[in-house]
Image (tube, rainbow over all chains, first blue to last red; front, top):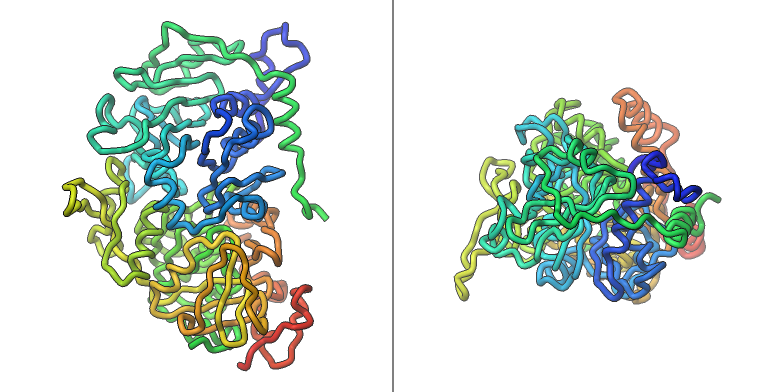
Length: 273
Length: 306
């Protein structure tokens, strides 16, 4: 998880009294609910890994966790810091090489769902994790780069994106396209021959956006309890479309909160001695 | 044929100024001690190749060893930025760093092409992304569209990688110099076979390799130099021997954020008295030396015949 979870208890309606939760917890639970039992899931580190492990600990015990280090079917007893922690290899059904994970497993479309983060995301779900600023050669901020994300975005059957909402992160146009969402709109992925369906959900700390079925533009379809549509629009860098069927999302249940907190409290075996 | 030498001798004999050097290990088995030896021997103008530069290349870049980097993800895994890498790219400190940037699938396939002795590899991908059009180090593209001769489909070709030298860390070598690594095996086999020279540091040297599930075995004649360096992947790890030192990765954020603090770390922990035992590979190579750092191998470790 990046950064310290921010308390958003002010956003929580009074009648939920003692079940205050952080925005990270709400995002994690929301992402976890998007995973169905028995799915194969390509997991990145941080919130996606927490969400996938939460799903496995609650409603989706048969979720298959795949990390890009080549660990297929990892069942970590605690949250790993990196995609290559020993606990992933030790608990995996199979450990394969890096060329194999990309060529045999990801590229042919064998993986149901991929989780991605982004430094910048645009209205068509394109992702930038490469550079901030107009020039690649003289970036304002040099970000880590692509890693496995472009292949996840291209080849997983569907993609879930997790990002904190601000006008700096949700922008009209990304400075660099690291991973393709829907390009410039309807038909773009098909023209490129990308086999996966693209982003199905964008989960932020305010709510959920989904692509419009026709235009592919990201549209606000869900907001967290206590969040106003105007708040979301004010923290979006484009003129945000709002679904006619906008839903207020169910807050984390006591059981979900207890499970996510238990996961995060679990200490690696052999550590801290 | 693999020759057993000290870590210092292995680096002196195989890494030269201006070389293209790959140090691989995907989170697991990263050859940190060898990287530190390259820093101590003050190699310059290197082209560093690695899928995930990680803390190891942050150290080499900050120490001024590199002028070019071929990579696909330059972060501190699970922590954040690589500050020395960013300082070099954003501010040219300690010297400018020219980038050849790819993505994991592209880098993995470029090593596969190099290992296979063909000039390129084919994959889906790159299309529609900014990475499709970035030039290589010499200004020429390393990514191009290619038409399938059977179906007419447009795919992507990536140019082969052929490092001058590849350096990896493995769990074991036998006395004949055959090397075995297991757990997350990454792209090490391809990186070794793609390179002109190969150096392997190992946790221990054993009489006979015991087959491990999913292991990669590199026959002795594919490796040039082997140095016994127990703990040589710290703060990365060797499955069965050590755990990833996640606290160090977290601590690196503060150490590397500031040029001065990084410089102090370099002096004390790589060049100076606080350097880890693993870095002192030379002392482990005398015949009959026990390898105290590795509890499980203390009795039967053997340092080689340097």
